[in-house]
Image (cartoon, rainbow, N blue to C red; front, side):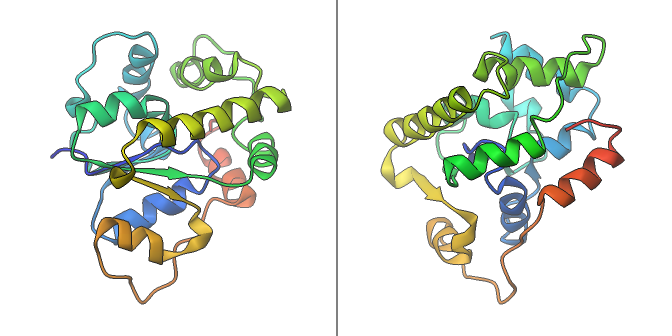
Length: 205
């Protein structure tokens, strides 16, 4: 099945909440960094993508209807071309709070073990975005804001939703053309949630 939704937002912008929301709305399964843990082949796919090697995106996303978060957010342009009818959702939050959240969670480790496929993937896909300067606040925010501006500049307005998950179901459901559920919008992956996930995955993201 082709992707119907492409998440262009960086990690720590509510991407796991969006994953669960999309799945509740019928746009699942939705790919997310947590899916990489489940597939031993996945880090290799994303390393290849980072090295600009030919990749069959339909193979990477076999069985999925949507994708959000890293690693796929780094390849939103390639995916938007590969799946031209998919809608693009750019999750955003305040730059300062985004950076603080990354430092408490996904950027906390150094990912410097070359023998670990997952850590190699993170360094290539995410680290390269920031010149491996994951703790440099000015650099990280510059990259984050430039990415968000680029997504908005290059994506046709009718295809794009710029979305803060704190806005709830309304904008998301309007954009996707579906009815709002009666249940609250999912809110998950706080720093505490993240710490529990790290423990479960032996120190990985």
